[in-house]
Image 1: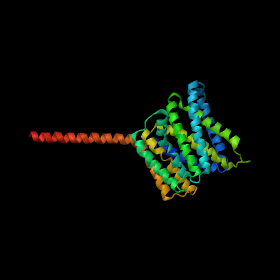
Image 2: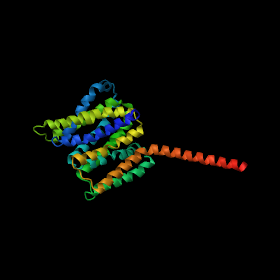
Image 3: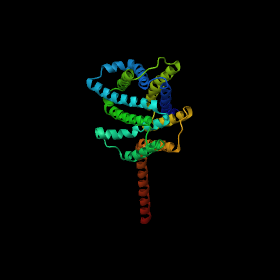
Image 4: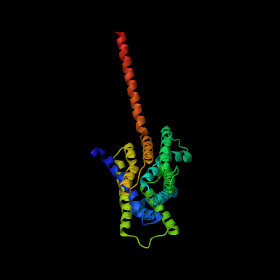
Length: 312
């Protein structure tokens, strides 16, 4: 059990990430979308601020500029995501669409930074596109407004991931995370004050869902994720985190009554297959290399054996 400690922790993290969708859905029943995400991320930023403050003071202007650039893309991602959450009735379906960001990231990196995707990407992308087509087929071959917002959120998430990967090497993780959380909270808060209407009163139950979203699905989740990644192999960690949309779908079906038709179920399976194939490609390539090496040794041994027989 101790051997798989990191993997077990990350399994819990993937379930907590899925529960964040559920907490958000219940919170949005009473709170405006941008207002909710503002409260959630400002509270999370305040949790990190005391620990990040010493490092924040030491950041250079160039580092601040890079952090703000990443934060802007992250803010757009969360804004589009929460708008999608407010419109969708199929939370699990949306989770699979958002997970496409993993496959969109290499495409964004290629377009922006000229980093050519690996060959496996061109196999996985049409597979995921076929899955997206099947998800849309239940709505007359067009995406619902909620799913369209989720798709835009996925593209913004991919952009945020690429920018974060490009700039995070020069910025410590804690101040970068704090800046990102703060930017989401402030930008969505300003939007909410300008364009959204808040209810006259908010029930204690709603605030409990918000607290669960902040403490469990954000703060505690990221803490466990850091611990889990430290004690697990990167390939195993990536595979386990892919399970987030699966847990989200199960929660949505069991608690929110989401109905999954065979087309949508097959679409989710195709997207999941594409994600697994893309994430597993380094390990598959390594195993293929070992298999070829093993076959080459067998052939060499057989030739040597045949040669000895002839000499006799």
